[in-house]
Image (cartoon, rainbow, N blue to C red):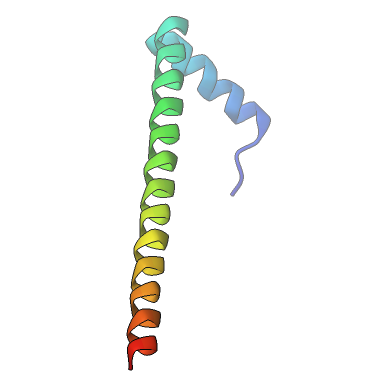
Length: 67
């Protein structure tokens, strides 16, 4: 069951009638900002995990040298 172009146009017309064009633009802007912030947080978490893994690997190498 796919949504065709006719259904999308109908949904858009109903959304404009309910919220108005300025409100829809604001909703789109807020959604875009939320997605961007989410991606930044995910990338920040990935980089911090990589850094902590690298630090633990370095510590293991130092222990192996000493042994």
